[in-house]
Image 1 (cartoon, rainbow, N blue to C red):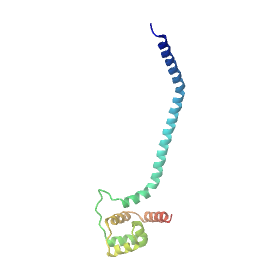
Image 2 (tube, helix red, strand yellow):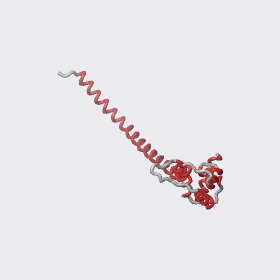
Image 3 (spheres, one colour):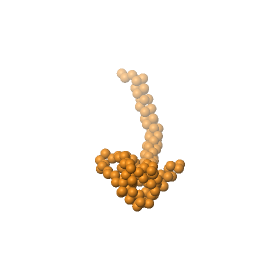
Image 4 (cartoon, helix red, strand yellow):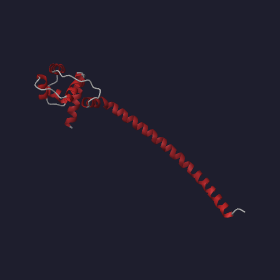
Length: 150
């Protein structure tokens, strides 16, 4: 004959589990809705971050490109006369041109006159600057002046 105490205990456990499930079901629905809302907010935040990076990317990308050497980069040659011609074409002073490259105006004069030769990193920056138009150079120069004054 089965033990009545054991049967009663198992029946009480079953009924208690059933009631707990019923009570928890509403909480599960709330948690699920909150997780869905949280996931939507995370997606929206990610999209906003991407958008803000996209708007700041051209300026930042240009600066990063000018500073970081590329592994498959073509070896660049330096020409003093071409540097002088490009600086004259853009109408920039040696100091402004040097600020774009990250050297002094005096160094630009020395490069143009052939008294000094720039390092590989400076040659890379010079070649990046030669690829830009006058308006882009002026915008980059204004941005650099704004960040240096802050």
